[in-house]
Length: 145
View 1 (cartoon, rainbow, N blue to C red):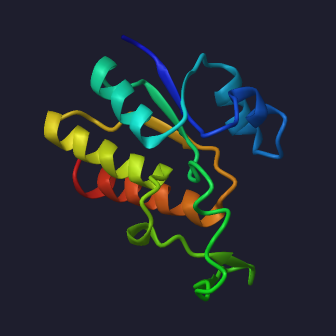
View 2 (cartoon, rainbow, N blue to C red):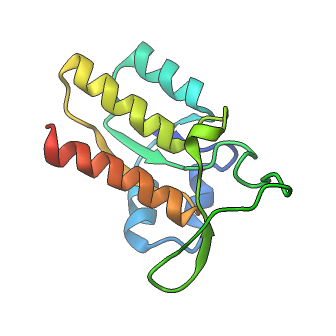
């Protein structure tokens, strides 16, 4: 089955078109039809049932875990090159699965089935999470494919 997968907990592909995203991303989103999945579990289920999609558009935050952090525990901050501060996602400390976890699962699936990684874009508003997904997938492509 040929299909494209749009991973986002609440947005629709049209929301990407009206956002302040780069033109290349809007073009990719507008020129394709999308199967929408809302969680890590739907992402895994869809791929296990229908095989790899031709294209995946990733969101990072899939739920409210990364929007509402425990105020009693100090947030870990990192300084980005443009001197902006962002919350650093602590993946190992949360039960909620993110787009990063989907990327990890995808790499494992491709390795297990000896398949190339599908094309992908990242439409997430989470700058650090987007970079983490991209770095993980690019590292796999560079060293393992």
